[in-house]
Length: 405
Image 1 (cartoon, rainbow, N blue to C red):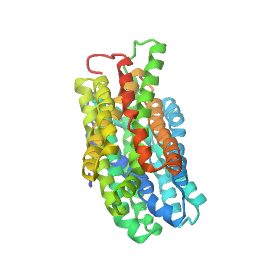
Image 2: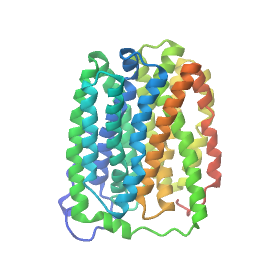
Image 3: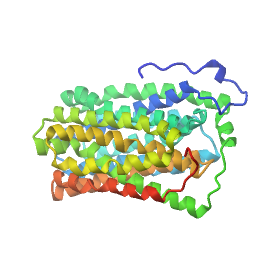
Image 4: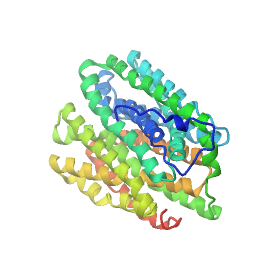
């Protein structure tokens, strides 16, 4: 999506917002900025080999960079979501991208490991503000097609994650760290688009109408808590494995198959592009056939391929990584919407919790897997992580929320 459509003038009124109608330009806008946001985030892991060489870093130090970024991107998300559920703050959206812009500018000029950590923290802070609010906007503009809207929003992020390594390989790797400054244009564009979205929310009072339209949940509290715990376990299995591939796939290809960095980046792009496609499919499928079934297939269904991947040659490694990306990525949108329906009226809290959990797990696992790679080797890490999708068996314990939930 290279050009944003203007938000229709008829939506910019003070009349009661119609929650049954899909406002596609608004969903498209937050998805587009999600693309920009996650494209910027993807710059960091994409240039890890360069930073590792330039700063003489260990794998553990590389993992700590991700830990700092992911933790700042995760810890504040539930708090932001909980606060804005009670006190809506639509203009937090452009403020989030402003923090990201500051982090990017810092990345251009820092010349120490401590500076890299601080810059990473600012980029993460921007994400912690952006994700719960943008997810809320996607849901309120969904017209009841919650899975579609969440997938559309999420696929924007995955598309950005896929484009990030390509742009990093084309722009930063040949020119060095200072060329990160080119990416500030994406942050500025995101601020402009999100300001328009915030104006739409304020003028239509869409957040108030969406809250009134929330359907109550009949499940007892203990079952809701148990279901959220199971969903969290599934998030753990998905994101620890995805972190293994997104952060260390290039190192794996370099070590096992002696691939140059540029070729390894292309393999990473193929995997991340497959993740984007799979993410978009998961939400609409959940709307039609049920979110529980989508979660079941997308987590456990990836297990045969993850178990075989460490034994494959280069060609089949590429093929299986694409299949894994397609299958495993379809779970997240279904999990987020399932959780939102478990706790109606708390869209910001649930979005912040699950986006934050995914970011936090990614950060912690990146550091842990980096330490494990230092102690053993990166191939051993891929062998260990291959078993994680087997945790998808716990999907059977989730409650049935209805024939199309």
